[in-house]
Image (cartoon, rainbow, N blue to C red; front, side, top):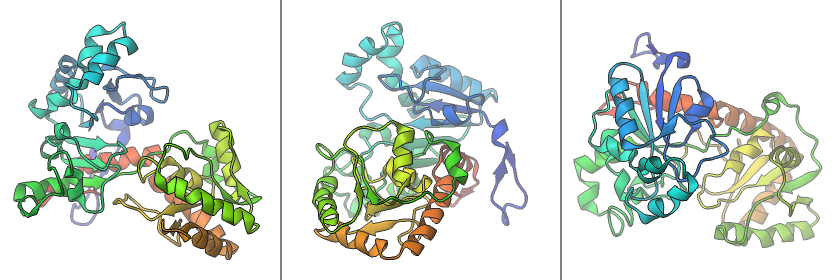
Length: 373
């Protein structure tokens, strides 16, 4: 497990090949470290991206695995939040039809995370919320107390806003913000990004692609964020000015999507249901500099403006101005594209995601909170 030198001089090191992981929900750790991870599935439907599960997160199965953890068979527990209360009727209405051969699991697997509210967890517990929402549901707040670290993908720049509309009917007041208990909870919140796992490894060392277009965009607009619908007319103005826009209307196979995007200098990546999007990092992986509206969230290992990415104002004209300015210096874009790729492979691929979370789980406590590395 943990192999460390002087804790005052070096971050803890560990051999991931020896870590044993109990993962409740998601499937990211099972995909990266299949032999070391037991995955108990929580979602209503099975996912094609995460086909290898070890069971469902029914209360009895979770308790069974926690007893195994007490016997030394696990080193860390990863708990992914569920979007709704486990008593929400959507679980009862849909799950039996999705997994008819597992009637008990179909009715109780959403309660697996809830068991952690009162059961003893003998190893470090890390909570993860990968949802599009900036809020934390009422039924997940207990994880701010039980978990060593609580990672949240859409973590607002003011962490207190995660309580809006769930724990507090409005923005948390001074009573909350001056509470030692709530401040300790906020300290546990840390940002995390969407991990990339579908790309071909050839992109890691690929030569700089030939650029045939100036900007690439492929994504849904109707029924999505207003940032996207507001930006489309600006793409059209850029096209009218003579810039080469690659905007496929058909849905491309994933590898074809990456290949096509690689041949543009820029890739427009406006936020979707959440600010953090797969396309931010997909563009970086194929050496197309992402063009993103300014962030509304705290970010893990962020792509920096002018170094890895181009950020723009969402007010009218902001996208057009940013694109025109960026395309005026192709040498700079070339260096940014390479830096963006390095950032993506260092921090935002699946292995980097898993290892960052595991380091936080095993890090020493510091002032009552985990020292996130």
